Length: 281
Length: 109
View 1 (cartoon, rainbow over the protein chains, first blue to last red):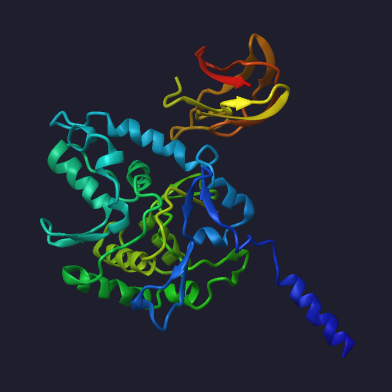
View 2: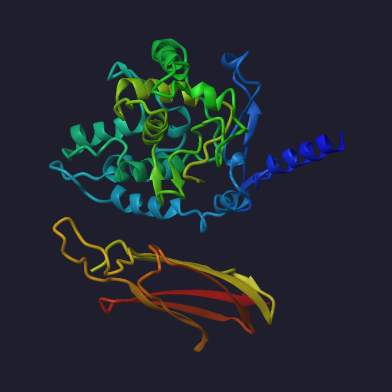
């Protein structure tokens, strides 16, 4: 019996690796309070009770990096995007600023409602698709790679203007069929390992997958600065990595499948706040 | 020639006399080590920040020699004792001869 106790104790000790303080509160620059736990949206009934930001699952040190803009390495890239914002590119002699002026005004609230149905295009679009539309059709410039560095940085600049706003993507109306498709993808098993998004991020968040602390896979923090590759990462890039990890063949970044999935995953975070650019491992 | 170089500094606006304040600095810089090769196999020439200094009212606070193994966007955090109102002057010396400078005032009172 005593031996069993010892074994149990050992198991308990070894099962508690160095994890973040899950009760910690996210306050950026000492004054911007970010909601990292919220009641789940009605469409998640039976799946999740509470939605939790990925920030909660990270180590104390990683959490701290996001609490001060000087320490947040993602901000270096936002500065870079601000220069691009003001730089003329393409045959029309325009920069982003030519039409959209100051992003602090014109881009405010955008990130909180995207991906969304774009009436003129008759499809659901993510922010990068809109950026490339502008580049090609208004600026006469070459489109950026959907999940490339320039795009991630520009998306971070746009995202920053919505930081602290509550995620609120529309899942009804014309976006509904895309949302349904995204939901189907979320619950479909892919790859040789036969894993769906839900297997890890719904059924096992909070558990360890080898050395990694599984989060709910929320995307309110994207674009995210990842310590593993020291750059900003877009949502589609992360999706690609996840599908690859199941030993499957990822969908094309910017394609209909990942855009549908992005809408669905974003809707799972309705109620959380935009954090991007966040810091993750 | 390094591109996209931008110094950043965070110094408190005010302090008590004799207080040790925390100073954070970062310069966005590629810090090309001189060890890497490009696609054709040619060595990419070294291009780093080789020296960082901080002075307060003409008195040196810190003077650092940087070596090629230091990674991109070098970040320094240190404490400085502030005896009086004055100005911190930060300089970064690039291999290409450029000197980047930033100044921050602090009020003691």
